[in-house]
Length: 269
Image (cartoon, rainbow, N blue to C red; front, side, top):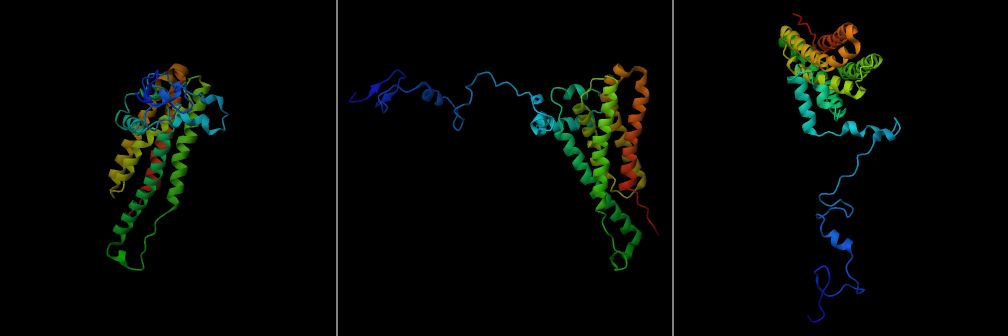
């Protein structure tokens, strides 16, 4: 055919420079999707084995990459389970294949800023009602409290980090076999219900605030106790009761601190 040859691969055209037969790698590259690296596995090939994070030292950030290996749907699903299905008590089973710290971190961080902002909004509404027509005068000026951000950070991060670590140490002493990541994951997602609670507490009605804080504290506390109940009872036996009472008291203290620090404003006549 006038200088064109059919090679073993079925290709018709002029022979490649050098006169050789095209290599198998050049034919294999035609099977890859556009833009895929030449080292990408072929369709149907076995996936590469997962990397063992424990091979890294505890101070190496790569050791903790698995705890951030979640997407938005995973985080939203766990938030909804903590807020709406708090009574199920199967959260440990749901997260055991892949416990994460990404969701708990952002839940806690969101609560920090939402509680600080809504606490200042509640303060402003109380000041506005107290001064009435004098609100626009230069003699009465409202100032926001930026210190609420720092107070909220200490309260929220301290509760999840320190109290969660304390609970883990007790569980480890009792040989309950609950990893620290599972405890932090449970405590972090338990705070999700306090975010809408803080928004509702802007309403300048103290009875409404107490009811909303009470409901949020009760449901999130029930979520924590229900999640850890089976492991604690199996390991502690009769000692589980004082441990549950201590955990419930600490959680009630969190709800009380949120109410009194951010949403306690009296209206002066």
